[in-house]
Image (cartoon, rainbow, N blue to C red; front, side, top):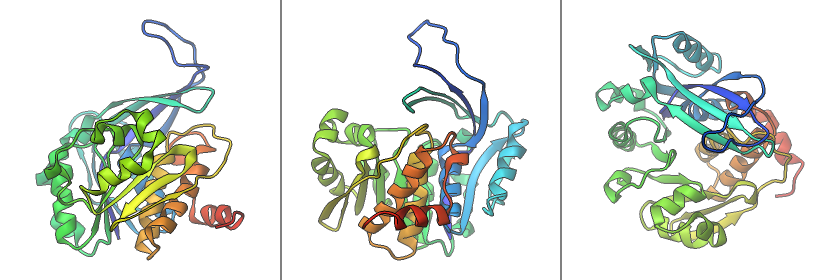
Length: 302
């Protein structure tokens, strides 16, 4: 069982020819509405990749709340730990330009009402992995990591949205997942410096946690574990929307690790899931299923 503790949002997406300048009004395409949130996205990604998944989170008592919960349940995700609280659900406002880049503004809503007291230790019993992100309060993330570690699960933290964490915040994290900007924040260098020499950044971060994966977009990913370090190439695809690619990578990676793959092989599996997601519009609608990932990899050399 993979337990995901994190955010559940409704994504409101508008495609634009380019991003507006401050103070500028720009006409975009039709508004599209998708289920999202980094926690929910990763739960769906893990479920579609073949994992058994339980989601822990909060939705509001607004019109979005039941829709978000039901959509998770439709993916065969255990949603008993998802409850409604007074107030709005989380919402993300997303713009996507013609180059498939995105900007995202998140209104956390109910996600910020998930507290350590809301976590039930029994949810973590028998879990093989616990996936965490930073769209819920940090103290809740830390509490979930402690419960996951105590239950014998591998704890993985996706450092998004990026925060500069202290060593104590990572004490119960087994696997740290970062992109270039997130790695830059933790290591105190620029994102450009990370991109130029990602191995140095991974070595730096590996001194703080047992394992690290640094995603590099189309260039693939770097990893470090138990003093070993390597790089896994990415896959060339025609990207149309990168909104859910990172979450697709994280969910698929977690499933692959749970199936016993070594970290480099699990990263390759995650790369395939992320690449496929980038070829489609939306977050959860773009997340590939296991058969699609396997077929994608079967057509490419190891």
